[in-house]
Structure formats: structure tokens, C-alpha cells
Length: 555
Image (cartoon, rainbow, N blue to C red; front, side, top):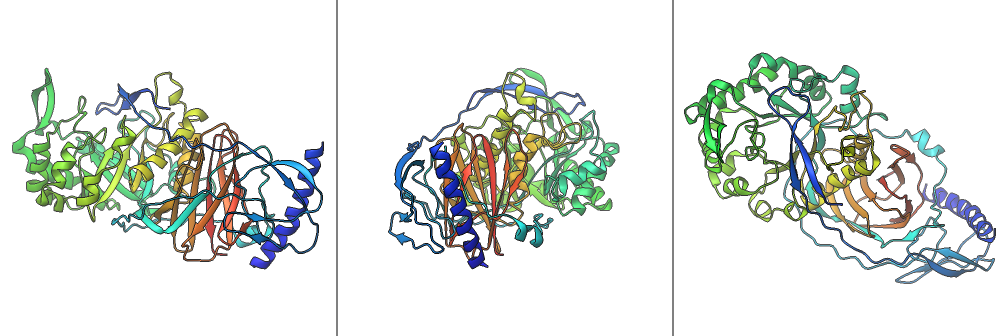
């Protein structure tokens, strides 16, 4: 099959060469972060949070002028050196090319490979989940695809991306979001919307995690069942979080001058644990097995719900959490503040009872995404990011889920969570909302498509592997592998088109087929099939302000 791929590449490359020669002749800001409230108000409360991010500058040459000589023959002989590969061609002409174009099938262009260094640290976390497999194109469709060879005219050079498939990091558990019908005036997802969210056919999001709410009023629990059951039956994991215990278990206290602050009465801790477990058993009786629960959403930002101190959190985990019959998550800090996480990691009894460290990332600086204490002491524990709306801002446009300037930032948010934070799960706040992955009309938004660039292809059990993260200014790359599959996600958040080369090493299978899916301002998950490759290298043009996912598989 590789012979025919290469033969087709030769023919296509010759036509493109003649055509090309003929053509030659003729940001971080101060954000307003919405927060959900226990009351059923339609718009969550806000707080202004300063967000710090960093941008890595990479110097790249814009273009390179080269003499190209072409020889038109039915066979091509390539002379290979350590740094570059050169092809002999007939017609002599002056043309603008890029220095990092890729070797395509049997056609070769001048290639300069920049050295890349990767660190060989391996994550020690794994996750056992069940989920629908990635939707794939049929063999008939694949065989009918025309060979894609990149046209680098008008592009800017980029440093070669090196994928080291033998260098492994965290196992991916999944992607998803929140459903909260008791809060949202629009109510629950419809049956067709559930299929769109948790299915993985062509027009679906491919989510594999659903987060739901444990209401303080038991009569409201039934509102969670329909969507949770649909998600669970699709193979998704269902987790649950508490905002507030029942009012009978709460008491007022004074915090920072606020005499109406709420906390759970210490005398009610055992009753509170039983209440959470009652919800787990209730959902089980309805056909939904809860994967894990968090006994407090944002205990460090509880102006509208319930506060917990670090000592109270440790006390509840150590002395009362055994009553909860499912996996136990930590409370979820609103900003990945490490105080109570550190206390858990440093308390062996508490640590043994926790299965998942979970957090939100509202206004969290990129420098705070990494967590060395967790890496050293959290072996065997899962690390989840369970809520975010990102990017956010103050001018109003950040709440238009189809505004591309903000939508592409969602892809960057996912990238940062997986690569900078080593998170295994990424969950949006409310799934169906005017700022969410599913609009209030039930249609997938641009934000949703940016999440789908990951969720549809990086499936549960895939493992992140080493990749050159920033080959050019504005470009972010990550890679993930499974049996017989390699997925690469490339974000180009710049106004330049980049000629991008990908070199893959230590892959445990022979490449048989490469396809790409792209979302930008004008297209959504647009597919390009049958991308030409040479052994373990291929090239592609990354469009300006675009997100592209490459799926590499055995044929």
C-alpha cells in the first residue's frame, strides 16, 4: 500500500510543481468570571480576576529564496544528508519557499531541521473508563481520497515538530461539562442534544464526562436523571458536586466581616456524608452509577454557597468520607489554590481516602498550573480540571460562543490544561449556554468545535506523549497515542500561515494513513484525507487562526 501511496505522491507532486512554477511566472487580561449560584438565577455572579499568561517567542525566518532545478522523470532519486534532503529538478526558476518543508512520498524539497530537546519524565497515572470509540471514516472513503500534498506558497517557516512517542506523560480520562437543570431556566438537555453532546458521530461533540449537581433538596434529584442516564449509557463517566448541604445542616458564622457566611455544622458531618451517599444510591437506582463525588464546589469562593477551612476538609475526609460509596474527589478550589491540596498530600490518612484531585482554573496563572508536590506524592491519584469558562473578559464578546477571537482561546485553554497542568480531564462549566459548547438553540458553537478538536479524537485511555510544544510564535502542539493511533493537535493562534513539518519517532506501528480535521472562523471540523507522508514524516499548512487535529493510524 505504501508503494501506491508514494506513486500517487510522485504524480501529484509533479502536477503541483508545474502549477506552482507557472504561478510564479505570472492575551492575558483582567477577566470577569461568572460563578454559579445555589439560587436559580439565570446569570451567575462575577468577580474580576487578574490572569497572567506567558508567551514564548520563537524566532523564525519568514521565507527563503532558493534556486530549484527540476528533472521530469518517472523515477526520482533523492540525495539525503543529515540535515537536509535535496531533489534534482529540470526547469531552473526563482521561487519563494520555506526552509522547513516536509519530505512528501518520493518527492523531496529542501529541508532544514531544527534541533529539539525533550525531557523524559513519565506520568504514573492511569484511568479505567469505558466510552464510545472515535468515529472514523470508512475504508471506502479513505481509498477514494485524493492524495494531499501541501502547497507552501505564501507560508512562513516553522521549526520542525518532533513527536517522541516513547516519552509518555498522563493518561487522558476525557472531556465534558456540567448539566444543571435546577439552575438553568432553559432546563434540561433534550434527547437529541444529549446525542449531540455524548455521541461521536460526524456532527457530535464526543464528550465522555458529565458533571451534575447534588441538590440540597431531595425532590430536585429527579431533574438530574434523564441526561445523566443518557450519558452513562453512552459510556460517559458521571461525576457529582455539592454546592450546599441541606439547610438543616448549615449554620451562619462571620467571615471577613460577613455574618451571613455559611458552613456545615460539625455535628452534622456524619449526616452530611450519608446525604451525599443517598444521592449516589438514588442515581444507582435510576440506572446511573456515579463515578465520583466532590463534597464541596469551590470551598474557597463560597459567597453564595458553603465555606470550608483546610482543617475542616481534612477532618471530613479522614473521619466521615468512608460513608460515601463511590470514588472521592477533593473539594474543587476555584483557582487551583494549593493550601488544602497540600494538606491532603501531606496527610497519609487523608490521601489514602482521596481518588481524584479536582480543581477549577478561574484566573489561575499559567505558572501555577504545574504541581510538583502532586507529582511527587500523588502517585496513583487522578488529576482533573472540573470547571472553567475560558477565555473570559470584560467587553461582553467573551460570552458569544461563536466569536472566533474567543473561541480559539478555548482550544488554547485545553492545551494549557493538558500540557502545562498535566490534567487528565477537562470540563467546561455549563454545556448548553450562550457561552458554552452547545448554544441555546441546541447547535454546536465554535467553542464546542474547538473542544471537539480534542474530545472527538483524544479518547479515554490515550496517553499524552512528548511533542515540540511551540515551533513558532502563536503555535501550540500536543500529541497523544493509543494502540495503532497517534493524534496531534496544532493550534495556530497567529495571522500567519505556517509550513509545518512533523517528524515522528518511537512509534510502535507503521504509518498507513493520515487525515486532518480543521476548525477556523469559516469551517468546523473540515476533513482533509490521505495526507502524503514519507516514512515517519509529513508536512501540512497550518492556516492562520486555526485548530487542526491530525489522526495517524495503521491502514
